Image (cartoon, rainbow, N blue to C red; front, side):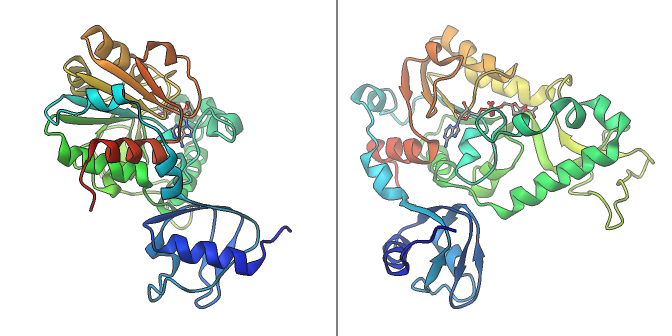
Length: 322
Ligand code: OAD
């Protein structure tokens, strides 16, 4: 296994630990002091040494690479045109996020390299038919994803959008993500178009049942009415929650600036929100390291990861940091 010269790695980590976030792209690392094991992903610096917050603890990385986030952010360029459309804090801003905004937290996307729908078959795991046929398998898959999501942390992109909510009085956050990371970062009312993986609901009477999941013996959870519980997420072939869709639609119609972040723009009706905003005269911005099928609709594009682009944009606008 490839390993870094320990002194070089330790120096980089020490300097990065004075900052808020560091990114680790590594297989595994371990703190010398408390033996806390680190896996790949993006970590708030305080997580590094959870035992006593000692930020100078030596950490051995067995393989991987470390990037200081702020260095990358400092290099990110934001055009004058882009800064100008967001300059007035009273502008009506809608930000619509997809799986890409959580990628830097370590949550897999659906269609990029390593994406969930490249490994798993949606029709056997994320449809009402799949649940009717094999609820056990569907539950196991969602429990697996719940567990993964609990292990990760919101990243600088999520945190930046919390600052934006405070800065822009007319701000709406719409997300296709079911991971709840916007809420965990502190966004007060993201419109969750595809539901929330941490919530369960009865497939029969629709009653919500918190985070109920598989029992320790693998038993499928049931509602008080006797019906099987299911994850409160939108599956293929199902309509979106009506209230959320209406709120998202109205906000997009009223947007002056619409920012699409980290979505391939393929899944409807979320993908139409950008068009709704454009038809109503909004300025459209796309943040995505890659071109998408809807890129041509946008007035301006930032081809960077959202954890870099959003804070860079915020800094350029002078949005207050903590
Ligand atoms: P996709 O996986 O289709 O697209 C993710 C997008 O994020 C891609 O365009 C990537 O280029 C981009 N991306 C990757 N890393 C990024 C980063 N660090 N910063 C910014 N962008 C990045 O995911 P969605 O468009 O969200 O629905 O998928 C939409 C829906 O399809 C999901 O909500 C889910 C799925 O089936 C349901 O489960 C109902």
